[in-house]
Image (cartoon, rainbow over all chains, first blue to last red):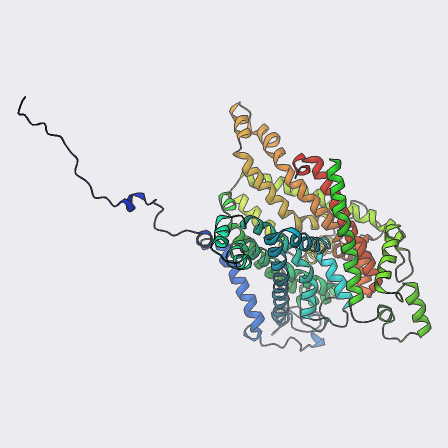
Length: 313
Length: 308
């Protein structure tokens, strides 16, 4: 035997942190649906434009005197249907009132109708959709059939009936009920579809497995995770409700004619469209821009929340 | 297929009862006597009041009234308007006009959706695509009555390219302008559906295969990409068909087109509640029926729907 030693090379043990090795490198940025959506939104100029417009309209609704000092109810028949004059930048209406001041003061009517409609839609539509999908069985059958009936009546037509019958009680709340009382069915459908998907996920089963009641699970886990399409729908519905109010007022069954609203102003200006088109144009423009701001905001949020839509851009 | 038709029709029955009942209930539960409202400020003679109440079955309990109305509706007797004209006669004259207008609007909407959606999808992310999307969004936000007024003023009154009002002469030519305006305010959904499916189709395997075997883009785009992307767009047009039939009130009012919507428009302006209710009911029933027909049409077009 030789006394030669065979030296084996043994690599030194590198005390690597196993946890460090196992960690998946995702970058330092945290990520979830809402953070991704925010990252997407904050670089889009349209987002700031629509947000700015919404802020502007809200400000005009809450604090109209910030924009104009002219009394919208003070009318000078001598100025009837006049174009822009000193102190009346956008001209005067048929009655001789200041168009600009009326446009500014009309914002609060439109916005409050929109907000009330959204609240009513949510208050009826959320429980109807969530309970139907989550409990299933006969609850689903009953609630969904009721929803089908409301869904089958075009909500504008339903509002026409309600407003004609309620001719003695036309105000912002009644008009909001006339619109929201039927528009909720779409929301219930959207939420139902979403809850049906969410309720089969593991965390819902886990929540029930650790002993939380079914209702508590619904409120705590299922509903918050199903709200994405609801938020989008409600933002767009706000715009649509403003349109519906203006259309009803235009038909003469919306708010009473002494209430300041863009729909009423358009309706009154319509008779003199040939001589004074601008009195019709300005409230129409304000209405369109407001509706556009809400719809655009809703669309952008939808886009940002949907990875598939992001990929298609 | 027969099974599907049967099931779809069965589902429609509770909806039919429910909608008509709901409209009736709303009217009935509201404060005030509808007959008194018809007389305006005047106080009618109690005998006259009694007579009118009997004529409209208003002296009977609510449920009896509802079933009497339903019986008439099903047997095709739609009653008379406040001014005494038969609703059947009005419908027979007005419905074809509305149908013509709505068909025109839907065809234009379909063309706009397909052409603009295809362009947008093929040019994804470019300037053309972005401007297409923004323009369609802006157009869809314009309240229809504003859009109609703007078109009426600029194209009808200022440029004199189209008649300002349609009136009795409801031809395709005279109704072109309102049809285009309606189409412009609703084509956004169809265009997006087309754009989405065109983008998806472009990276689909059958398109790659088509390119791999040497087909030119001139052949791939219309035959492979566009044709397969059409189904959702046509589906959407079906939905807008129903919605438009129910929603022509403002359009027909502003352009004075003598369709169903116009009858409702005039009744609203004059405050004739009885006429309003009966026409809203008719429009709702039409809306439900059209939607069933459209659903059945999908089942014919797309076999997958039948088996869900």
